[in-house]
Every structure is written in structure tokens, then in C-alpha cells.
Length: 240
Image 1 (spheres, one colour):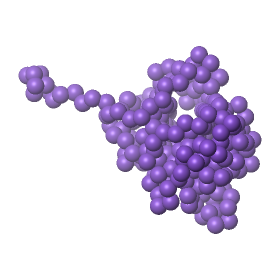
Image 2 (tube, one colour):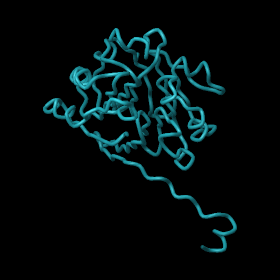
Image 3 (tube, one colour):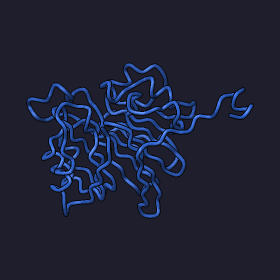
């Protein structure tokens, strides 16, 4: 180790996670997959973190956020320590209502149907996220106003992140989605069959199953992929 390194400490390298690099209509994106519902989207040098949770990534060693999105206040989606690790004075924080109520700081409170433009060329619309099955209503009740998000980049690329939901009227109404992250996680959100229903309604170009793992009932994502053959491109990435 050099004298400078001994005096000041060796610079920590950025941790590595599974990523995809995509080009959609000449727009270059980089997607990072951490675990469970924690993902990141990089576009034109700007970084959007969705549901960052410290258990899922070493956020203190990752690039700071331009935008942070939180879908709802459950511990596996809303983590103040992760937000603080990614935050700068220039970071825009968009939270659902229940998360915003417990947040100490400036943020946009997003209700289903709300729209925001947190920074140049990035627009966000909140989509209602809730359970519809009678035995699951207690997990994500509609009246709490949890959110999924449609992120639009440069008025052209549209990315849907479902949050915790089942196939709802609001989800089925989505159009022109390029990339969809739709949850498939029992017993709290969608069964594989419901995820197939949701994907067939949304018709994204690319579907990433997400929010699976970290529960007692594992999801067979390979079987899910087979059920969607001929519907859209399905990309399986580890989120365990």
C-alpha cells in the first residue's frame, strides 16, 4: 500500500451488482438489480433508485441519487437509512402518502394519479397499488393509497414499477410501456397466474419479474417465463 493510501485510506471501490444495459429507440439505460424490490435506473448520467433498503445493497458506496422513489411504507420498501445514504441537496424524493407522513425532510407526496417532474427529462406518475383478493386485503389496502410508478424518460421511454399490488383496474389501463417490473410474490402480492394476467394487460416490450424472494413461498420464475412465451420478452434477473 502506498504512503498516501496509508495516510488517507485506500479508496473503496463501488460494489458490483447484476445489471442490464439496454437501448430503446436510441435511449441508453442501465438497470441495476439489488434484491427484492430494490432496483436502480440510470439514464443520461442520472440515477433513479426505487425502494432502496440497506439490507439489499451497500448504498453508502453507490453513486448518489438524483431521484428516489418509494412505493409504500413497509420495511422492505421504505428505509430512512438507505435514503440518507443516497441523498444530496439536489436529490428529489418522491414518497407515497404513508411514507411521507413519517418522513423528516423535503419530499414530494405522491397519491395515485399524481404527476411530478423531479428533474430534467424525467417524469413520474403514481399508479394505485393495492390488493384485490379477499384474503389479502389487509396487506395493501386501497384506502392507504400505496403507489406504483410510471417513469417516463425524455417523453419517450416508459418504465412501470408496480410496487406491491394485484392486477387492478388502474394497472390494466396502462399503455405504451417499454419495461415493466411487475411483482410476483406470495402470499402478499401476485401469484404467477396473476402476474401473467397483468403482463398480458400491460403488454410491455420487456417484463422483469421482481419483488420475489425473501419469503417462505418461492416463486418459480422460470415457469412464469414459459407462461408468457409469445407475449413479450421476459428477462429473469436474481432479486433474492
